[in-house]
Image 1: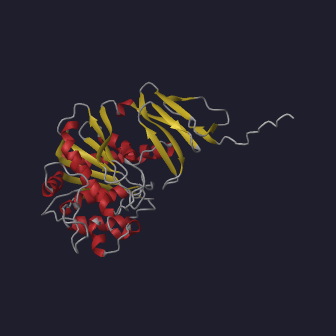
Image 2: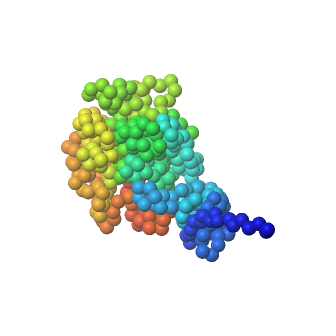
Image 3: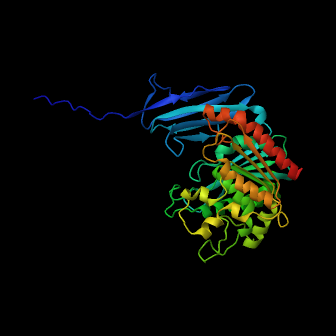
Length: 394
């Protein structure tokens, strides 16, 4: 009796890979995709990007649905990227005019600390031949719970125009357990990351041609809050714990340079941060308490820059602040009290409302809409920000 042939009933799972049409360059995909874009799970794709004449690679990337903003992009800054297909995704490459990057030495992923699962890092955008230039530290937004330093690279490139600044774009932990940490991260931990990043940047600034004693801080949205914190909460750096003793709230930087006391680090940061540009961010915990687990008013005040604005007689910290007129997340009512209190304390403030734009116009992501918004609004207002920094350092 003939044996019955065995039928393999296992069906190979596939996902749809969509290729985004490139501008100012091209890319190839190997192996070549089928006409319907259906690719077997586990397939490794190799993407190789080539810029057109007069352009340079920005990023090779893939984007998929998920994350805080509905889509998430994974980016690679070298011309070749390998992608393992395990979900529906869009693949592409973006290019920028070469004059934006030709005079820059860009260093990606400098790790400054690893307090949890995620290594904390920053990128450096240094004009070639930089020496003793003021530093700009950018702290990205994303609801304290998404994005990383890459989203600020457009702003970083704009602020290096004219070769007057070395720009450091830094990452930090996300709140709660979103990094995969077993112990939830609280808002003060993120601020401690910012101080640790600045301490690490100061320690290594001269390697990139920056002056560690001259720092501007900026950031957008959640990074607006964190950059304001970097500017006005630095006198609270210390080793007394954060709320472990009643009434004591001191920030211990996530990174501490060897051989330096916490008081030395505090003084160096307080003295160095001389100007702030917190863009469309909240400054009072009542406007972002949904991201904070603690309910103690002492804690809430301690993470609120508005509660700690210095009088100009004690410390000068000029502010440049922008927000979009159509920003549905950060209203004028959120920003204006901070501005009013800065002015009451004698601080210089320039507040610009950008007509016709919403939230996050300083972001840079691979999608065409985000890049177009940055080009229309981010570029000119980055120039305004840089001019404000110039008034302090030059």
